[in-house]
Image 1: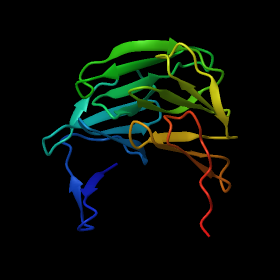
Image 2: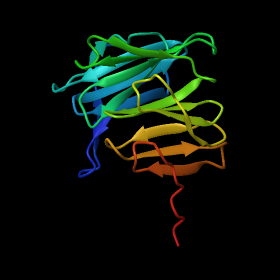
Image 3: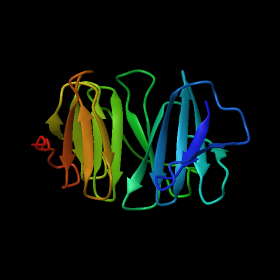
Length: 194
């Protein structure tokens, strides 16, 4: 796998030399937060976590667990990692990092009714999507997660700030878009363009 960076203004891309070999894969995730730019590169069960927090090079850091889903804390500095269990019935552990992934601390554990597919965290809410299509939300620091939406299959959530986010869900060829402006409390589908 190779990493490239570019700017929208110039439309030019350049290869980034990260200083070490990345696993050969096309699977990964870019995480952008106030504190830096991060990448999780995945091959099978191997995850490589990279951090770029001011310098021009990426630095390899450790994730808190082998099956982590990493996301920024929107509206604040920091990262979260949902540590998914090896079995589908075990608890998910949420860990946070306020130093760019150098250290991690456990915040809560919760057993969900299905495997976690994505999460979004703001300063006031946690939205978690499940493989079965449930979208659940906590505003009490992980003590409860009532269902706020049922979308079918393969939901994926991202927040753009402390209040607003988007959710893409549904089977291939029939994906639907939802949005929130209320920290994930409601998810209306946007109007189709005229």
